[in-house]
Length: 271
Image (cartoon, rainbow, N blue to C red; front, side, top):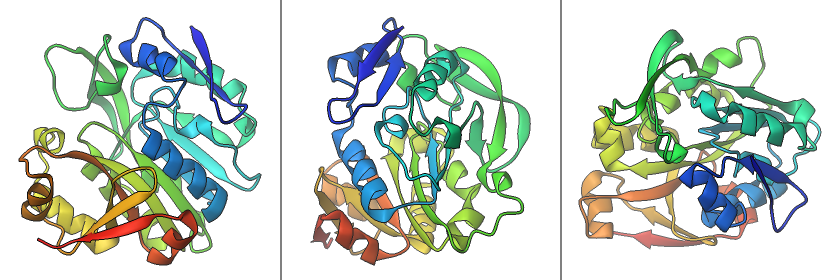
């Protein structure tokens, strides 16, 4: 077990140096996704969320990178139970540890016991709910995120979330529609990989339509740049990328005014 101290804060995470994902984090001083880390940290500082949700924690590169205000409820969800001892050690030394709850489960659109999950021992970051014969087959419980907030008034809450679950993003989002709808303000980021999504059974255009219904959607182009598509469908974004394979990150928000405090430059793309 190796400890990594973030360069721009006093916080640290623990990783498995035998895991290629862990070694990459060691090499990069805990920051392998700078545009997501930048988004997360400045949103925590400027947006002042009251609910924080990290789905697909992995080693906690994003979740543990920030300090949070004392009134924030913080939930991390990770399906790979092999990472529990590393996450637990990182949690133990985080200044907001008493506000944090880590659930070792698969976030989905239903609550269910014994859901299949496939773990890569070589690179933990690609472990997935999508069947993969070269990975280790495990069983975990699946949880619907909305079920975590049964008797809580959400209308005064400001939600910040991150979802990175190797193609399972649609099911996660459909399991948290009440949270998205009821919270006063919402902003988050999701990984978008059309090949992973299709492997999980997602219809890309229907998924993009779902995103458009609930959010304003932007591509996170860099640490300080966003791209807004005039029409959000597969044809538009594949034309933008000049490729049939699209792997990027989207910023989602219900209220565009939130972006003003985050100092992003926004470029329009018209197909």
